[in-house]
Each structure stands twice: as structure tokens, then as C-alpha cells.
Amino acid sequence: MSEEKSLNFIEEIVEADLASGKYKNILTRFPPEPNGYLHMGHAKSICLNFGLAKKYGGQTNLRFDDTNPVTEDTEYVDSIKEDVQWLGFNWAKELYASDYFEQLYGFAVDLIKKDLAYVDDSTSEDIAAQKGTPTQPGVANIYRSRSIQDNLQLFADMRAGKYKDGEKVLRAKIDMASTNMLLRDPIIYRIKHAHHHHTGNAWCIYPMYDFAHGQSDSIENITHSICTLEFIPHKPMYDWCIENLGIFPSKQYEFARLNMTYTVMSKRKLLQLVNDGYVTSWDDPRMPTISAMRRRGFTPESIRAFCDKIGVAKRENLIDFGLLEFCVREHLNKIAKRRMVVFDPLKVTISNYLNEWETLSSENNPEDENGGNRALPFTREIYIEREDFMEVAPKKYFRLAPGQMVRLKSAYIIKCDDFVKDAHGNITEVRCSYLPESKSGNDTSGINVKGTLHWVSAATALPVEVRLYDRLFTEENIGNAEGDFKDYINPNSLQVIAKAYAEPALAEATLADRFQFLRKGYFCLDKDSTANKLVFNRTVTLKDTWAKVNK
Ligand code: ATP
Ligand code: MG
Image 1 (tube, rainbow, N blue to C red):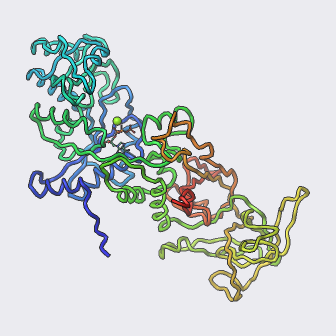
Image 2 (image 1 turned 180 degrees about the vertical axis):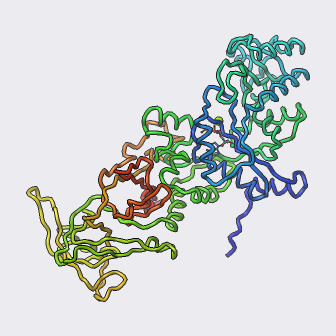
Image 3 (image 1 turned 30 degrees about the horizontal axis):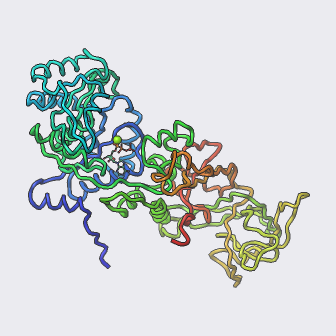
């Protein structure tokens, strides 16, 4: 069967532009504002911009859209670079919109000279009031007819720091009656005496988004400037600036933002979760940030596969978080090393096992023929999961119960002979006997058992901490939910198992490793681990526990 996928609408545009000879090579950009950590929505945009260039032999710039001095920080710049690289993409150039401040200033002077921009002394309240409404045209004020000469002088004075914040603005002179409110003489420069993370104190006037983005695209010769749907109303201004400045004609194309179930996709909201202590940090594994997904054990391959699967939409939609988890499972199944960890230990003594110990061998990954084996110590005392034993078992219980047999994974078949209770009636030990001829790989017992349990040898068990994560929110569509999004936080999104028992091979775990803990899910080492205590994150369960039973 052919796997060929049809082109998305942006690929169609690019192919047409290449076929017509409009461009020889395409150049895209990913333009984050460095005011927070990147989230899955950004991952979608990264995959789209870099993926498109890669597919058509073009290139992509990483441009920090850093025209707002107040909210930006180099901490964010560093994290953004790390995330893009981790996702597997290389940028052609690392650029900063703030590097264009001098050129942008020159563009503004150019507009003033063409009588297409003016300095306005009005208060922001007056400017808003004069702007009209969607059904009523705006009105021009007296500043609109200032002379070019005065405007040039005043704008130079703004730059020189003669005025306080908010005292004056520079506006484009377009059309106060336009049906597009954003064309009613938009503000293109404001005064802000603030330190900028990249330009320091060099500037006290800063360009607005609408006067920086398109021009930055144009300065870099970006051919296809891809952004999200909310920028559709900004497009006429984007084109107006390029046309009136006579600069490289970059073109803007819009696609739908990625929204996902049970989470929020907005740096502003994610920052609130961090600042208000709902999560520990931007990379808390419950967050939808790229850094959190990395820490949680998601792989770049699975995130790229997910972005590819959801395609490029023209209308807003809500993507099931389970689809991302499906992609993660698909990849981890291929690469994760199988290990055994008991979360809630119950001691099992194998009465007729008289060796001190023996070393068994178990495959690292049945999906990978080159995966090799690891050594697995077997001893007289082992731990199994408490829930894998029942004193009185129902009919179809294939785990351990008095008189019943199970296989210990990669080891032997054991039969439960007896069990011990303490004074409170809690089961403290299960006594079994094993079938020496039932050794995995060399089983001559002729006995078939239905249940296979994971286990660890008590003598060599390694105590580890395990962190299990659930959805951060209880509401599927937070965007549509009433009230504050924080009202829908899932109080049980983190469960910590302080002392689980791991097989000794896990002592060698590194941050790059991916594991499947048998019957428990996919796991990875967390950066909180120390030499004395290893901490593991559950990346994802083995099956979708949130799948709807009846759609
Ligand atoms: P936020 O609202 O989270 O702050 P933003 O759009 O303001 O996001 P930017 O740093 O300005 O964040 O975004 C960089 C790029 O990523 C932009 O091109 C933007 O359109 C894109 N982007 C942001 N969020 C999403 C999303 N949810 N889906 C797809 N693309 C997104
Ligand atoms: Mg933004």
C-alpha cells in the first residue's frame, strides 16, 4: 500500500512558488519571543518551519523576537536553543530582532519622510477613544497633520530620551476609517526606558510587533513567514509596511494553533503555574513544555512523529493528548530496555531453592535483536508486587494464590505453598517452591502457566524513588472551561513511590536511557537523582488509561 501523504496547504504554496521560479530556495524562520519556555505548540511550529525547509532544500533561521524589553530574559534564550536542537533541528542563523533596531529606526524615519508616520502626543486613553469601534470609524486628531520636519525632530528626540514613558508615540498614517482596526494608524514605536536583555540601555524607544516582525522577515529575505491564525488581521499591516518601504516581499501564511486536551498552551499561563507553585518548575514533567517532555522521557522522534501525524490545519481544533502518548509508546517500545521494578513489595521465600544465588539472563528488548541481555540475580528470597498475591483468589486470577502456579519472568515457575500473616492480619510473606526444570529458555517441565510476574531478588534489590504522573488538569478542554483555568488542576497529578525495589542493572542507568519497567510503563532517570538515590519518572503507561470506552 502506498504511504504517500497528500501535501498540506503550505507545501502546496511552496511547491507552486518553486515551480513558477518565484524563489530558487525557500527560507523560513522560527520566531519565538524569549519570554518563557517553549511548549508543544512551539514544537509544532518548529517542526513545520524547519521541516518545510528541510523537505524543499531550504533553510530556517532561529530569530528571537525580542522587541519587548520587559518580559524577556537570556535564561529563556538559552532554553529555546536547547529545545530546538534537542528536537533535532539546526538553524541557518541565530538572529535577534533587536539587532535590527537601527534598521527599523531607519524604516520609521523613511515612513515619516514619506508622510506615512507621525508623532502623537495623545494619552493612550485618548488614542483608544479616537480609534472608534468596529462599527464606527475612528477620528483623526491634530497631531496627524504635523509637518514632516516636526515629526523627524520629535522622533529623534524620542530616541534621544527627551521624553518619559508614554509621553509620545510614533504612529503609521494609514486610514482612521479602515474596516480593519489594526490599520487605524497603528502605534509603531513607544517610549520605554527599560533595560533590554540584548541591547542593554542603548534604546529607550522600542518598535511594536507589527513594525518589527514583517520587516525582520524582509531583512532576512524570508520567503514564507508562517504564523498562527490570530495574525490574520495583522497581515494587511505586514504587507503595507513592506510595500511602502519597498523592501523584500516576504509573505505571511497562517495555520491553526495546536491545542491539546487536559493542558494549556500559553507561556503566560504556564508561568503562572510555576510562580504560584502548582508545579515545581518549567520542566516539571507534568508541564506541556518541551523541556518537561524531555525530562519525562519523551523522545524527539516521537514528538516529530506526532507533529507529522496531526498535520497542518486551517481551523482551530483540539488534539487528544493520548495521540502524543501513542507516538511516545510506539517509539519507546522499539528502544526501551526492559527492567523489573517492584513498587509495593511482598516477600516471597522459595523454600526448596537451596543455592545461595545464581545469575540468570534476560533480554534487554525483545523488539531489538541487537539489544543483548542483562544479568539477573536470582536468590531464595525475592519480592513480588503485593497485588500479585491473593489469599482467596477469584476464578480467573492467574497470579499467585495458595496452590496456584505462576512464572517468574526470565526465571522459574513457582507454586504457592503457604503464607504468613502478622498480628494485624497483614500478609508478610508468601512461601513457595520452585520447579528446577522450568528455567526460562530451558524449560522441560511441560507445565504451562497463564501468569507471568515481575520480581526482584531481595538480596540485591536497589531501593529507588518512582514518580508517576497523571494529567495536570481534570478538564478536557481548558480553553472552553468557565472560570480560572487553575480551578481545574488535577490534585492527583503526581504520585511518589518513595521506595520501590529495582533489579540491580538499573544502578547503571543514565539520563539518556529509556526503560520499560515490566507491566508498569515506560520510565527514565530523573535529573533529581543522586549517587545515593535514583529517581525514575514514568514517561507513559503501557496502555492508554484515559481512552474513552464509548465514544
Ligand atoms: P504563547 O501564547 O504561549 O506566549 P506565542 O505565540 O506568544 O505563544 P511566540 O514565542 O510568539 O509564542 O511564538 C513563536 C512561534 O510559535 C510563533 O510563530 C507562534 O505562532 C508559534 N506558536 C506559538 N504557540 C503555538 C501553538 N499553540 N501552535 C502552533 N504554533 C504556535
Ligand atoms: Mg507572543
